[in-house]
Length: 83
Image (tube, rainbow, N blue to C red; front, side, top):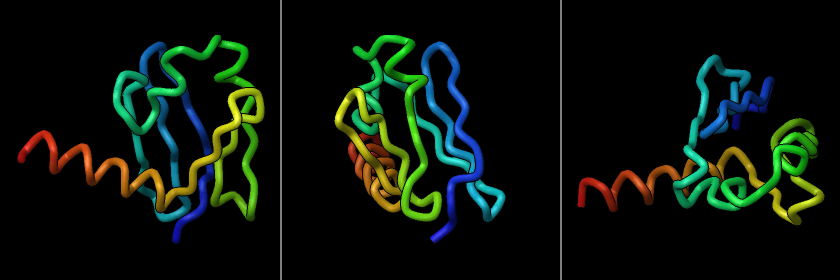
C-alpha cells in the first residue's frame, strides 16, 4: 500500500499524492469527503498523517481515512455512477 506524501486542498476537493506516484482525489460533495463539505477551513486544515503516513486524520472532525479506505469509497462511487 502506498503512503501519503502530500495533501492538497482546493476550494472544492482534496487530493492525496501517494508514494507510488499516483494520487486520489475527491470532491467535498462526494461520499468519500462529505465530512469536509460542512467543515470550516480551519477544520479542513487541521489534519495529520499517522501510522507511517498511511492514514490521514482530522482530529477536530473525529475522522480518519486510510489510502485503502479512500480507494474503496472511490470504487463504490464509480460503480454507482456507472451502474
